[in-house]
Image (cartoon, one colour):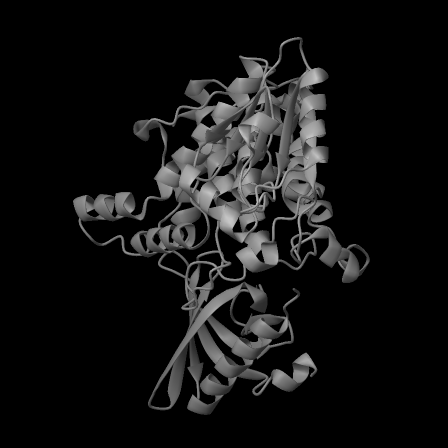
Length: 466
């Protein structure tokens, strides 16, 4: 079926309500095969408003009298309201949006393993060993891990960081999985650091978004809801496990193998963060893009499954989980604690969140490299990186205060050190913070200094006036 056949009403007169801080926008609402557009009348601003239909997470509609209202809850956490003239037009447009947003879908097994050498220590990732109830052994795996230690420092040892609990790993044997037998991997010690995944992580995300959408409650009640959703607890656990892996390499000279079950979710969170902690090149704009491409896209994180819906959908498939968002939140915490050490800023993290859930680019399509090859994604779509690396985008994405830092970054995971990522979770529900205006002023200072001095800019606290 062609997308055009799903459009029941092509256009109607409507008013768009975008949130408490944005003025209403009235004009002609148009539905296309991929976008929702609203064109203001000639007396209004000439800007054309548009929304990618794939970014709609859930739709609610209601009618009263001779008009209707459609509420669109989006994957980037926006809530939009369309007041439309005509009951029939309202119902038809709602059906069209519902059909089109689901009709534009693409739809994995992971690559075997990846390793990165830092000095003579090695960081590896993999899926779980397929031991099963018969306690099978894999000679190739055992030889590989022996070779890793033999090629490292004399007397080097290794740690296997399993992101499942010991009980979960033991139970996995019944379905063909399991964990490494101590006798088969001499020199390697197994550490269990369970990280939440799947349904519990998704529910935590949903409850957090619900709390952030209800800011009129008392502060005590709101803080209680914030703690109850446990999102920051997941952030703490992920950062703590990444620090454990990084410390093993940096301070003990050990080799590290990280895996959970499939090796495409919590495993990638830990290995990605460990590299950001240790490797200064991963903190540059280009290095961070390469990290995401290598550790998430090429490693087989199933974006199509995990990011099918955001926090507003009434469906709760077990394969959905905001694992990539958890990683981005941890990176934001790093940037907040080390504001000069990342070349990219919050804008880059927000852009990656938005595009992971709904994007006109092909970078996050499908669930694996195999699927992307079969769908010819690289030849039939444009890369997100080419879009983000355009000069006009850089001001929104780069950190104007960046100074290369050759040292490891050791974040604090104490409760008072971890903050709610307001730039994401409160992006559409509160007015811009004074710090955002100050950030724009920083950019202006940096730009002026670069023009006059042609050197690395410096910004004093008095100039910031935070």
